[in-house]
Amino acid sequence: MKLFKKNMQLVLVFFLVFALNDNVCYASAVEEKLLSNILKDYNRKARPVQKETDVVDILMDIALPQLMKVDEKEEVITTNVWVRQYWNDPRFSWNKTEYEEISQIIINQRKLGYRTLFY
Image (cartoon, rainbow, N blue to C red; front, top):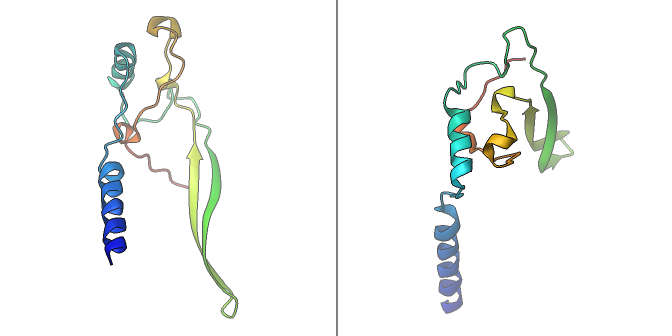
């Protein structure tokens, strides 16, 4: 019983340290300026194009990260499937020389919102 309590305490500490962490990433002042300039006029509802006549190419794939259950008798397979979509957004481009040669940054998806695509 003591071992169980000790293990449970370790699990709780692990949970508190990692699950409640806000995934903070500290950026340099130049990265902050770049991020601020990129997101300044960003509208998540607008199509990711520079000209309204431009076409958005979307690459799609399906990932099967989990096979949950196979019922041979009923011939049913239960899975977890991800439909992933990739596209280029030219609004997220900049001149590297203006930002100390920074060529890429990571933007938290919560700042961008989710895009709904219709098929």
